[in-house]
Length: 396
Image (cartoon, rainbow, N blue to C red):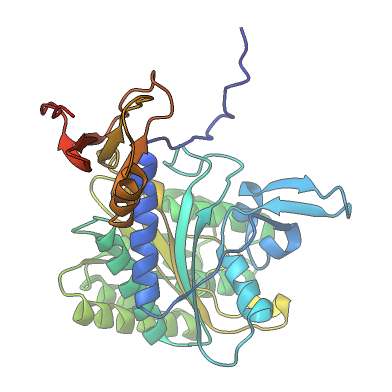
């Protein structure tokens, strides 16, 4: 028995009517992006590997499918993330001295399923702003992210804020004191991500920096956790305290701009990829096990392209937002008839289609009405008119 029809593990396809829902989500989200002044780009699905992995950590490298370009012999990568592509566009393809806002929507490919997502081919939509330093830009992209999710039908989200500078500053102090070697940095990052305080203590010594790192997973809650964090981290290096102050200022700005949002603080939040170096954020919902959207600041990542600008942005997997409850688009069906006069049919069909209706014209006598059609076009005294299914067809 042939198995050629099978797809690779974790690779899914979206069929009618769900494909219509997914395309509708893509259009709604892009309409929101454009209304905020973001310019749409369509980067290629495949690029030279070193360009795709610029500024990223080991996690993105492991998620990127790699092939050899037969024309050049160089290694190519199938994109697993589109942020680096937007960075390249800002730094080179569409260079501007002004602040630049870019958005995109397209498929990415994971070498393996990521987190709770079973699909290896998400449909990502995202937005990035370049050349704007400070929390004003972060607040803008967070507001855009929330509005895009609302347009996609997601209500009552939980917004989680963190700051990579807190973790990075404490790790830098540990390395400086000789309390952390390079081999253990990835393991420590993983322990922080999964909130494993005991595992963190098992990796580190008993220094101030180590104890503060081990305390990070407990610093999670509403905005009241910020003064608690400040107290626990009072002996931290100055960059850590500056990051904590920036997190507090951003949280206050978001609370004022979006009072209806359930805002949570997670000082140990490390969502996203390794290129983030400032505020990070993610949106969750009780009905979903993983983040619906996430992003953060990644200043200077474009330096490898010759332009290290301030940058912040986010992306979301539109497939996660599907409800799978959308019916096929409604429309009309024109049964096949070789004998009946079809004068005026073409113009009637064209008029309905111009109004946005779906019209299927049978091309053989065996073709039956497709799913989703709510009626048929019938000839009534020389005129072709829509008629609901089940109504009596008038005699000609």
